[in-house]
Length: 426
Ligand SMILES: Cc1cc2nc3c(=O)[nH]c(=O)nc-3n(C[C@H](O)[C@H](O)[C@H](O)COP(=O)(O)OP(=O)(O)OC[C@H]3O[C@@H](n4cnc5c(N)ncnc54)[C@H](O)[C@@H]3O)c2cc1C
Picture (cartoon, rainbow, N blue to C red):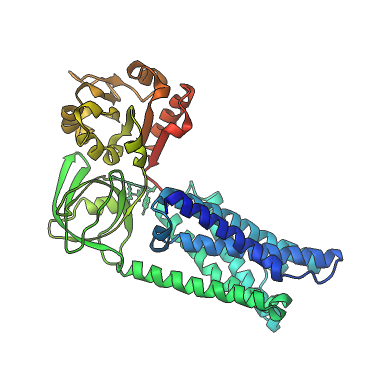
């Protein structure tokens, strides 16, 4: 089954999860209070359903059974989180309306009765989600990636509280066996996903590689050559892997430059922050845990002709193997943007392989260098691509370069289906 069919099936299953509560949430009365309570219960179950799915597909050890398209999975994960939280926020608002309580009813903890203890479980879930919402919607651009990422993991802690809350406050749960089956199924699924996550934390789904060499190929850009300790990965051109330097350490994605018949793997990375700084000091003999391969970028290449790659700096990595292995009459056109030739990774190899089919773009005109000065633009593309709408484009690099290139191509009436992009962030 291909990735997009599997994703469609998951989307249908998500819809089914949202619809099932209609079968067991009952309308206690048709007065306004009964109707708002009914709506609040449906919103609560729908929000919970979306968050459960967010948790399920947010785990790579689960999502890779569904699709290798990590970018599409990530978009779905973000969508589920966003709308799941929104529905959960609406749930207590409707409860307050129904009970005629003050707006603080859903926020102030109360453990005076067993019913209130269950409501308080829901309040705790709400506090957690408020923190996540605040950090994602208000603070996302003000805090750096790492604290935001760790904060957003707390969202998962809201699930057990929400699950403990629902049965204790809902009268339908007590009388409906469908409701019980629904909640128990969720618990079983969550335990299963948690076990798969534990497997991932302990590297039980990863491949062990040993570093053969690390070389600084241009300032702050390094090439890693790794050898499999036993089993080897078999990535396709353009795919990426997650690399873990220490047993419980962070995992970061890197495109595979190339892998050979022995399973040796080559990755190039640019030093950006904490993780890549540490990776730039890794020594030969070091053991690395690798998971993957992931991604579907450049999968269309076999089916299309007139290929144009647009790469910025280290964004050349998903294209390198395609370029170096292309036949004489099959050479793609490459626009390669860098601050200066000295910072352009693999420049000699690319010039040799592509001849006049590489267009170099630099911040300032370098001495004796061919190419263009400035960023990628409509004018530059038009100068080298005679009929732009007859080509298929693959873009990889910094977000502002991708945006500028995409805008230029769309202005030149290139069909959006012919523009494929990979951003180096998820
Ligand atoms: C599909 C894909 C392929 C990539 N291929 C390459 C490659 O071939 N070579 C290369 O140099 N870089 C590649 N990257 C980028 C690389 O993963 C980041 O530069 C690296 O993770 C930065 O971590 P840091 O701690 O050094 O920097 P930080 O300053 O902490 O992070 C810089 C930015 O990188 C992104 N990032 C950080 N951690 C992660 C993470 N765990 N998962 C996803 N994104 C993260 C965030 O957008 C963050 O703002 C790729 C990224 C993706 C998503």
